[in-house]
Amino acid sequence: MKALIFDSGTLINLSMNGLLDLLVKLRKEFDGKFLITKEVKYEVVDHPIGISRFELGAMRVQKLIDENVIELPSAFDISNETLNKETQRLMEIANHSVQVGDKWVNIVSEAEISCLALSEELAKKGIENIIAIDERTTRMLSENPGNMERMMSEKMHHRVHVEEDKLKDFSKFRFIRSSELVYVAFKKGLAEIEGKKALEALLYATKFKGASISFEEINELKKL
Image (cartoon, rainbow, N blue to C red; front, side, top):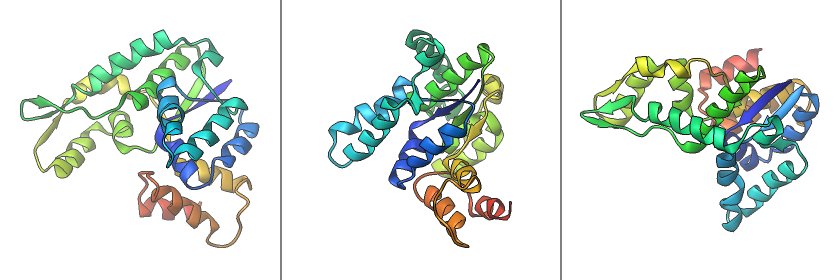
C-alpha cells in the first residue's frame, strides 16, 4: 500500500486549471490512497465553500472526498490527535530555524506541515508515501536548506541565517509538484488533450497557477 498526500496549493492549482478530473483517473491506476489532512480540507473545502468566488472549487474537491478519491488520515487509522502533536513539533522546528537579525521568521503554514506530519506517521506504519506540494519553501527545508538561505536573503533584502542543523528531521520527506502529476497523467494518456503543444500547455498552466517550476525544468520534462 502506498499513499499520495496532497497539500492545499496542489489541489487549488489543479482546480483552477480544470484538471481535478485527472485525480479520479490517476487514483484508479494508483496502488494506494490519496490523502489530505483536516488542515488541508479546511483550506480547500470548509473555508472557501462559504465564499462565492471559491465555492465551486470547494464543491469539486468535496465531491472527490465524497467519492473516496481523496480520503482523510483515518483511512490508515491515524488520529487527528497524533497528527496535531507532530504538526506542532515540526512547525516549532521550522519556524525557529530561519533568523533575520535577532528575530525568528515564520516560514511555513500549519496545513503544509500537517502533510509532513502525516507522511511521518505513514512511514512509521511502513507505508511508502510522497507529498504533492507546489510551494517552494517547505520543499527546500527538506531538499536544500542552504539554498533557502540565499533565496530568502534576496527576497527579504536582508541577511537571512538558516540553522541547517535543526532541519535534519526534514530530510526524509519526498515531494512531487502538480506539474509532475500532470506530466504523469499526460504520459499515461489520461489528459484527453492532444497536439504537439499539449504537454507544454499543461505544464505552463500549472506554473502560472502556483507550481514552483522553472522554465528550464519544463523544457526538460518536455524532452523526456
